[in-house]
Amino acid sequence: MKPRLVPLIIVALALFALLAGYATDRQPSPAYASNTSTATAAHTVDFEGVGDVHLGQRDADLTRVGALAHPAAACGPTLTTTSAADPVFADGRLVLLWAHTPLTTPEGVGEGTPLTTVRSTYPQATAMATPAGSHQFDGLMVTSGDRAYLFMHDGHTVRKVVVGFAEPVRRLFAHGVGNC
Image (cartoon, rainbow, N blue to C red; front, side, top):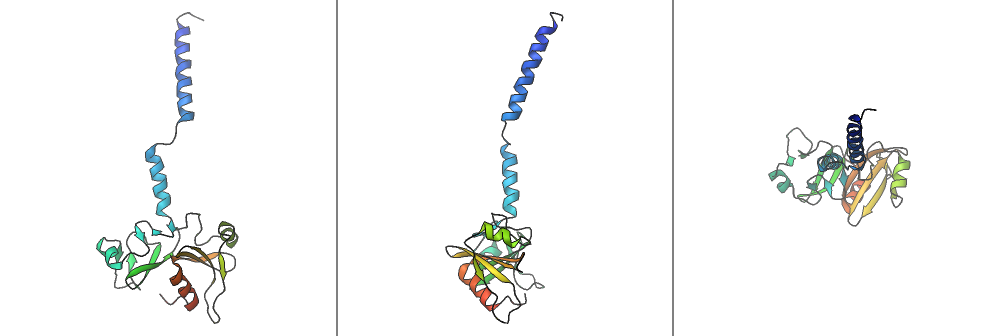
């Protein structure tokens, strides 16, 4: 080997080792991490609500900030921030959200989730039998304080998801779903 090539080889090997170490020790950039959590959060509904829409907020306040619209052709008010959740208000406050695909709970449960997964994810869930004469699905209810998830299912798969205050969720299940 020529004496002139030895220093070049040493420099090349050192540069390679430095770059290899950098690549293996490097963490994702903050921009990537925030984009990932934002994408995940955009598809999450939890005991607080969905995105910047929170249970207990007044319909007038949500309308004022542009998060709620009142289209004439709709059955009721609609969220402008997501088409995957339908709001239900009582006494002017948001009490329930019907959550549709792609929304899931933080644990990944949503419409289409196998019932076995729901039961293993929420072993504390309370089984709720369909009221006599009703044509709605049976349910599993998960509570945390005054909040609840209701997973209505066909015995195999979650078909409908409701998130809200526990008492309105219980009333909804006991008195039926309605036409809207």
